[in-house]
Amino acid sequence: MRQRQCGDDAMKWIFTSLLLTLFAATPAPGQEKLPPGIRIHATGPAPDFELPDIDGATTRLSGLRGQWVFLHFWASWCGPCRKEMPAIQRLSERVDAGRLRILLVNTAEDEDTIFSFLAGAAPDLESLMDADGEVTETWKPRGLPATYLIDPAGQVRYQALGGRPWDEPPWLEFVESLPAAPARN
View 1 (spheres, rainbow, N blue to C red):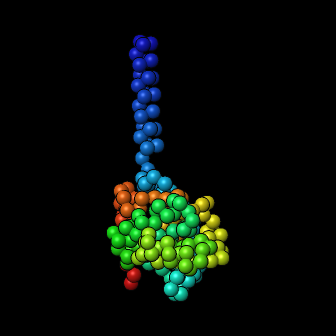
View 2 (view 1 turned 60 degrees about the vertical axis):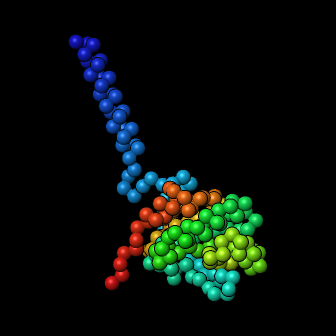
View 3 (view 1 turned 180 degrees about the vertical axis):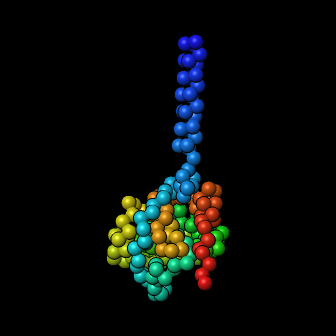
């Protein structure tokens, strides 16, 4: 009898352990499986800014509401930034530009440096110039490169610190799976 009770207790313990393991391994709603290096970064509304690009046109972040924004802080002297930029160029060729706006923000470099680098690495990408570094300081990335994904409502949702092969699975699949903006009336 005592042996049977010990066996029942052991089975209960094993069953409970398995349930807890299964529960811990199942993502909660909104906690989808993310590619390596991407984390949920729900910090609220994206800090707004307005910056010029290398052609002199200005872009205001809040003016991009209604689509996802891939906001990427970079510099040409940053090794991981240099390595990652061609992957971002290829990502831009694969995703619908009406659904995802890829926006680069160069940190404190001059127009000639930015233009020379992008001409070879990512000629089709738009880069804004944060010449005085104020926008970068407002966003406070912990290093470069730093990428933020901002939802169509203007809320920061995800962050990636360091370079990523954005044009390869699972990063490309993640970006392509971002939910579409709700239809406007």
